[in-house]
Image (cartoon, rainbow, N blue to C red; front, side, top):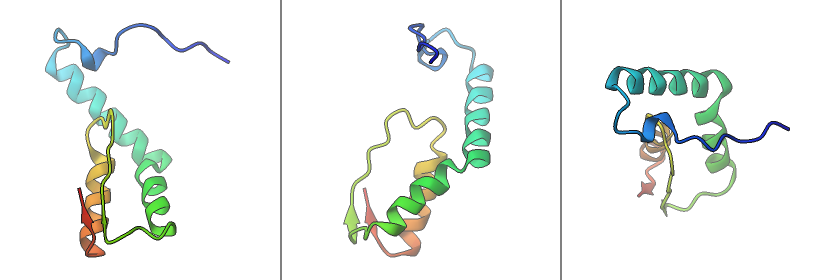
Length: 82
């Protein structure tokens, strides 16, 4: 197995140009779309008897596409998501 990098994340650097950050977030959104990142999360909540009121903490949420999709789903299902 390949070792994880110990280098700081590009997105965490104050010196990273905004165009590079936008490109990185766009790439993550595309990868999530292609590999079903949001679908996997939504499937979990659909299949696991999600209560009418619940809280989600997404650490390192990138461009926020997965929490956005989850919020859309919760609104359609009339669930109070924080």
